[in-house]
Length: 124
Length: 311
Image (cartoon, rainbow over all chains, first blue to last red; front, side, top):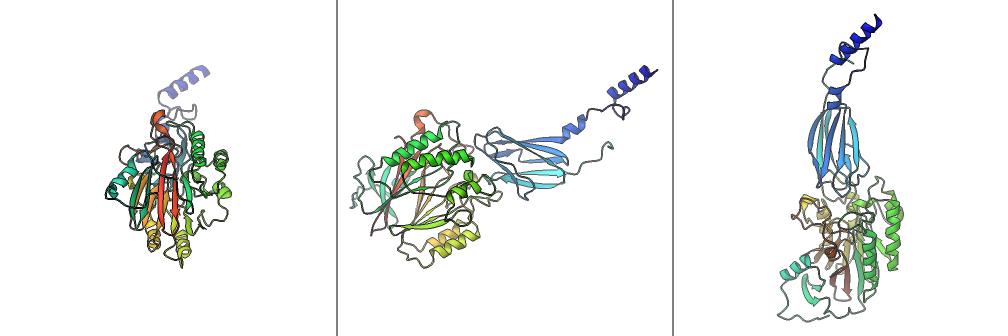
């Protein structure tokens, strides 16, 4: 009896997740796709220069140049330490808004992160 | 130095072109804003004594270890060796910034140790690589004594007025170099009342004229600087940051940028970005170097000799 129930719950969790709520921790695959974004620093530019993400997303900048750069928000809401070649910096955006940022060593390098409110999906 | 002008002197434009592109040093003087070439370094006679000679080095980037130069400390040492071998001992040295690569204590320590081998007084201004930490503490602790604000100051030598400016702080998104109102007001007050016949030398890291805005090679508010300086009969502006020699003459103002002692950068527009130029080992030292600047007394002439580490 117990074995049958456990087996059914396990199968339900594998198949859909919603039915198995409370029984198994479903892989948060959809959440993971939206939770991370990447900006590459190449040739003194941020690529992509403008990205749009959902609130709660972690953006990671990686410096692919052989010269240091540093990421600084114009409104001072985030600021990296200096990033030597190959270094990365990550920041999680929780508040919606338009975030203009630049390289504090080479201010002509600019970029924008547009943060949108998290849409209502599964209730937590 | 040959004083007389012959009709076979190169034209001004040709001399300026040579100064910009050629690796060899050209000895030349300026009189009334017009440069007169006196030939190549090998032919020039020894500098007359009685004037003021000093050297400019720049962009030592101690801590940098990528192509084309894995040994920025070594090439700085070669540059200091070149300073020590000058026929006329300079009165002092000016370093126009980016002493270190990442504002690390060890980088400043190494730079200081090698520069001290010149046994000269050195006047520094910071580059953006020296101001990597927000409070600028490390740079100012070492080099900020007697300076104001973010590290600006002035001093006099042999009747020449020297002004060190800082244009690498409070940088704004999308902008160029920045001097800021407080510094500009200080500059105006510093120059007030000085005789217009006083030769003036201004030194700062980022060029005070707009060399190439796409790469950030310029200073947003340098216009006011030039307004305060234009009444003086002889003004020389020495900058670094762009890791190559560039010169511009505008009546009584001469602008000069020095080579780096660490790595070259591309000529504007010839590369996608101003990153380090990766050249072969054989070519590297012809693109690094020092500059010697000589004032002749009573004539307010100026000679700038850019010497690469290797011809």
